[in-house]
Length: 226
Image 1 (tube, rainbow, N blue to C red):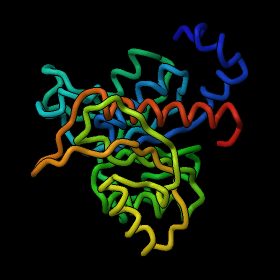
Image 2: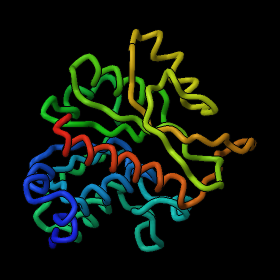
Image 3: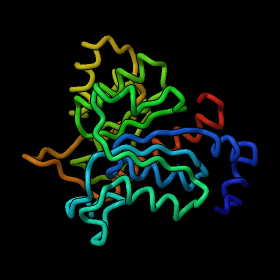
Image 4: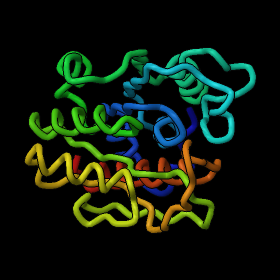
């Protein structure tokens, strides 16, 4: 993989740091898939991707793994192939399994430099976050990226400072119950559109959330904070 354009900005030493970091992305849909692909382009070479789901036709409007030709395939398998097409030297562990409280100790290694929570399920998110907090594993969590179509703007903040985000509201309550004192999240500054039933989505919103998460991780590595 040619990293010359990235090296201009970050230098050779930081490229070496990127290559040596070990990052896990849990949930590889609209947000998580974008995180994984962009981290790979930045030079991250050790990636663990975990998701139990298969590509569905309804994913095509927003997910990097979703094409007419990939419908029905495991998302992690498609994503691994895409990452290796970017960088054949990448070491990608693709795990087609759903995170839950019973398998966290098996799937989430204390050797991960940071875990990206891009899960949709509230309960699965809570279990993952609590496990990482209890085991001193760095984690960044994605909040809602649906039901919005304006110019996307996301901030990194503590979850207890979030507002106008239905997912974050539910998460705050449940995390307080589990005595979690803080959690860095990526959250939209826009108010969502009120819809009924299934959450609506548009291509650029989850992608932007994923890009902000990637930028957060890259800058943390440069600053030697992870």
